[in-house]
Length: 239
Image 1 (cartoon, helix red, strand yellow):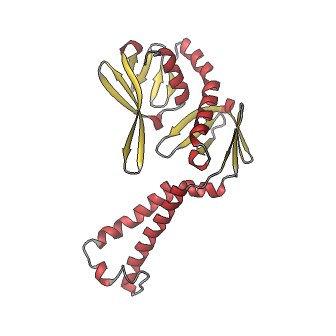
Image 2: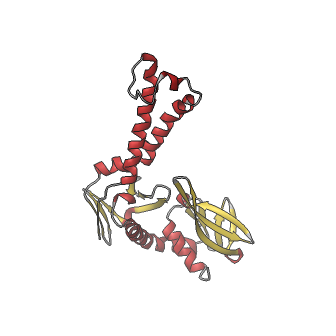
Image 3: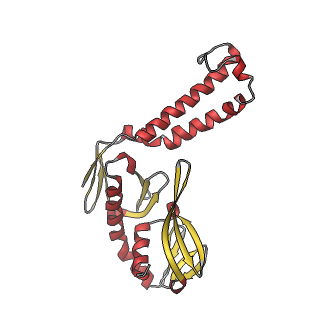
């Protein structure tokens, strides 16, 4: 399946807002030199106002956050090819081809909607979902393909008695391992995902309830989550 590149409006507006914050900062710094690039807003009277110091110190951090963090998708969009293709064996992004069989690590950064795909040679491909049409479908395609290639090896290691690491969680034949503690399958009441919104950020958590106690794990810190969820579905069919 092919996905066309789309313009990241939100990221672009964040870049513009960051540039505006830097412009305000520059206007305030130039007032002592009697250079007024915002003459109706930034004046000597404004500089002496008690609130001006707050604006002065917040302008640069806000600009860095907006341009470098929230606006990074826009700069990636400028360099990205026009189309991304997902096939049964891998994905093609411009001149680069990534085989799913070479992927050893999958991590979804939910708060940025980025997918990190680590390969056997130690490289990492950052897939920015918001740069492509039908991002939810793209995520589902990659999750399914990566999960299918990893599932067999994970089951083999579990049957051999190994602990399979999934970032913040570990998986054993007897149950889940979190912060060094084993959570036996028989003690788990429910497992669910949960979204928490705070301002512009959305945090996704995996909530495990065992013996009436809840544990919240940041999903962006879970490696190979599609494989983990498939294993949980097999071992906890009632949940």
